[in-house]
Length: 67
Image (cartoon, rainbow, N blue to C red):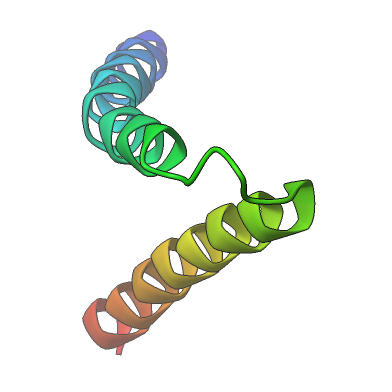
């Protein structure tokens, strides 16, 4: 029992480092690349579309692998 808890913790820790490196860099680049004159709504919609696409691709990949 104890071994599986430690394994799950380490897997989560390593996964979070991957997400910070990959997703964090992409979101930072998108945020910095927005035109300074863009409205808050435009910025929000751009980041929303990125996250919807990212989560949708995870769902599709999970469905394919799970099926």
